[in-house]
Image (tube, rainbow, N blue to C red; front, side, top):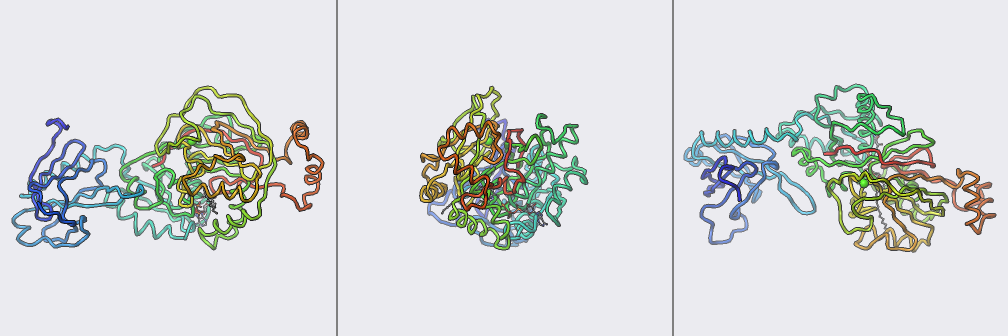
Length: 513
Ligand SMILES: Nc1ncnc2c1ncn2[C@@H]1O[C@H](COP(=O)(O)OP(=O)(O)OP(=O)(O)O)[C@@H](O)[C@H]1O
Ligand SMILES: CCCCCCCCCCCCC/C=C/[C@@H](O)[C@H](CO)NC(=O)CCCCC
Ligand SMILES: [Ca+2]
């Protein structure tokens, strides 16, 4: 129960001409019907409601005789002339309404006050409360990718997001990108970043990747850290990144927010929600290649991405087309995966728990390196669940967002039928890891070396383990022989990596809104 001293305001106000007790405590706006109607009416507001101040978007004064919208029944009504004179001024509160499947909507309620003075007191008290919320952004730098997904980024921002930011009093600088890496290079060089509280990315996973590359690079330069050094730990970003989903997979948005809905994301940004997330760095022979926050996939997901890039004109459906094609081609790849198991962490990749909140990275020392050699259909490293509309629970449903680990999933060569069983389980409640040819490890670091790049001593080890050594040798020497292709590519958050032999390590966490 709230202590009386926390009560800031208590008034009898009217909502749709019905009397309500309305109170503002330090963190809660509540309204309660004074005489509840004995007859149930589906369109009439029910007894009482509360909204945390942290979920109020804004408050605005209504002018008399102005149309107002009663959101409870979605109808428009006009404040009657008499009503306006009797009741004085009115004010409207816009707030977050939680809907099904993690969706948020902006609802509003208009309170009519007995006098102008009462109205002013309410408006200024709520505004004061809102002004004290330090985590809310005031200035945002918005990058819109007009090319990703169904090419709707600009429309989505203009029709669904801009007005909400405006109502919340957020000042924006909007840049519609003109080419790939425009946003990354802009963040690296041109911008006076200090005047912004955050960066907003309107696009998909590839666009988010551009933004983190620009921002991380810029933060390292500003802090005097060499961004290419594998041994330096990253200086964290002081700017948060918000995502307005407008891509084809939108897995980073879906896995953090629980849905890929632009309005929901805009509201999360407005109320200042934040979520730290793991960043892995990918190196080849000690040369930095890229950062990754969601999926690093070799084999199936690398091949799907490579094939789908040539079919961008199909929009998001390109992934379905290439997915079926690559499933039927059934390519497998040989190589060695070495990993450093994460020790002293909370949970395992087989937990039933789903994470959409932060986890403190554990700094306990890790175990010994382990190596697995074999033939794989897919090697996936999921630093977050990678949930998306195609797979609502994701590639690794129990992966944590910010625990300093990544879940390494190895799918060994198996029949098409078995691989299909594994894939289909991504879309149902069944456990995709509960199959003999699938293993999953929570790791801090891993390396992959395709068989063609293995050293002589590694190959000797392989030979001892591999009964079909002569056949393998012939295939390596004669790649045109028609058996499995030599290399796949890595899919790194939706971008293709230029090398197959990689070294991946957890780097740091960045903030995301
Ligand atoms: N103006 C532009 N013209 C062409 N390409 C652009 C432009 N702006 C950004 N890009 C590039 O577009 C690529 C794809 O963008 P994005 O990730 O937003 O969509 P997507 O690939 O359809 O979605 P997802 O990554 O969620 O599957 C990114 O690699 C980004 O660098
Ligand atoms: C026959 C039924 C089979 C059903 C299989 C469903 C499995 C879907 C799992 C989807 C996992 C997505 C992981 C996220 C990857 C993103 O970083 C990347 C860029 O946005 N998207 C893809 O690579 C796009 C990947 C699209 C794969 C199809
Ligand atoms: Ca993680």
